[in-house]
Image (cartoon, rainbow, N blue to C red):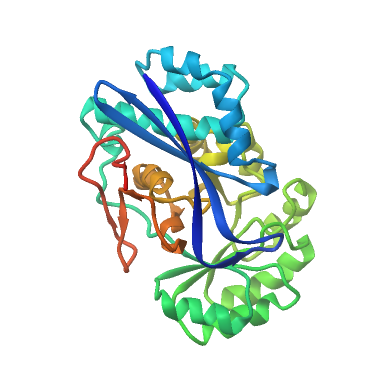
Length: 336
């Protein structure tokens, strides 16, 4: 099996700001695994919040290149277990795991959703993310991209006023992501006001480790609350299930498709909602998420829509949020 690593710098259409950071570019790592004339592709983006860079991931992977290239992939789950045993970061494992699943599907001659028996005709609509900016700029972004569901990034002193101003320009569903910027009392106070403004749910309003605060929120918030920063790996699902209405799984943070499948199953068993979110990946990473959408309640897979130029072909997201799946197997990805 041949391994290739390549760094890309993805330029964004607009400066992307959340409560703790802003950026105009997204650095991303594309991993390819080739065998028997087929190539599988995986992706992981850098992330300053978790001190992950493309260079650090490439260095991790290079230390076991020979072992990876000698590994016989009979199933991606076995490959994932091998990688986990090598103490790689979940971000690095994610790129390799996605590539392994894409390769596996292409070798099997089937798309992954078909392998999992889920079909691809029924799935939730992705939201489109509006980052923090002056209200005029946020309105401009909405008009540039008319969409049925917007995720609004908040974490300012005027959050409710911002949502009220945005509501004047669209009838779309709103989802609010405060990225850990609110307190429990602020969340409880804001919730009924935001519900009146057509907000569907709140995402990670409190700091990731504020479980006491989330206990209060769960008892008093009139809106459902979805965990993001509080739900990173498989072992987080159970605790989040007791403190949140649902979880937002990030493939990059949990280590790829393999653990995400187990997290989805556990969350459903607990009776909580399941969402998968993106980290502004290209179509490489988003096409992997697309294979999972029939299993989800919500999805945030707008990464390619936020880029000036994409680097791959795969799943297409139409203006109404509908998906056009690739004719290729696996995750359906090919690099441009």
